[in-house]
Image (cartoon, rainbow, N blue to C red; front, top):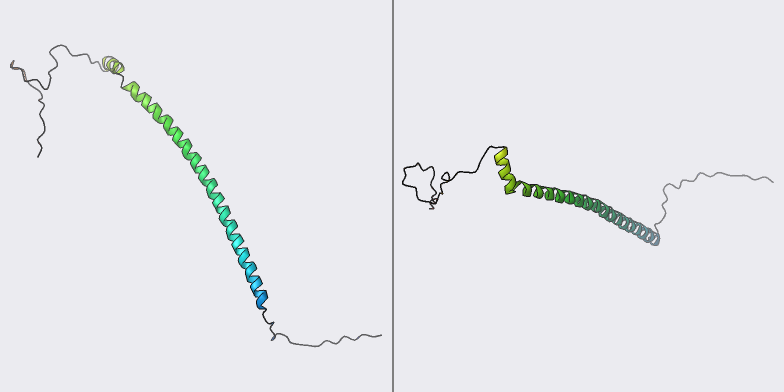
Length: 130
């Protein structure tokens, strides 16, 4: 038996399939659901990234704060040692060559000038206020 295949040239380019509204609603629901899931996942990922980034920033600031506290403590110790009256007296005598004043070399500013005719270098007065 012999089979004969006949080829027919049919042009279906002008035909269009009728849209199924149920199928379109289904596809729209799937697309909206996928987009919503994607937005939620990206939001969660961004939030986790921000938490990690802020954790590193907080740790860096804590390290900086501890360093500044140590520096402040060292500066306070240095300030206390520099303010020591015994040290100031020793430095003034040994390095600067200063010595304690002899009696009669100190003239109090609040005392009235002596009538000995000695020159008065300075006199304390209150400034005028307008």
